[in-house]
Image 1 (cartoon, rainbow, N blue to C red):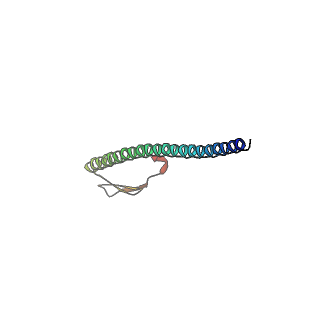
Image 2 (image 1 turned 30 degrees about the vertical axis):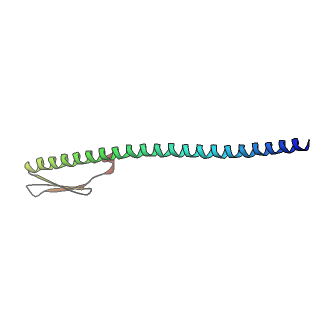
Image 3 (image 1 turned 120 degrees about the vertical axis):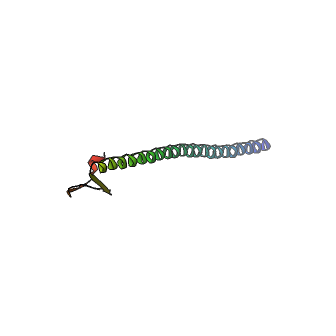
Length: 108
């Protein structure tokens, strides 16, 4: 009975140790899989943001060309328009000028 009890105890300990190792391995594998999913999701989000940034740059360029075109058309009609940051100055051929600050509410 002594040999059987020792063998039973040895098999039980081996089973417990094997179970702990398998559990740790499963947790590590799950953590790695979650980390890979998060990295992939962040890469997709970053690529999406890059595309949006490129679209915004193109829209900004288009709007700058539009503003330049409007200023040139007004200049032909005798109005000089200058934009300095958030200040817009308009002057005509008679020496009259107006300066206005661009308001945030108008931009939204």
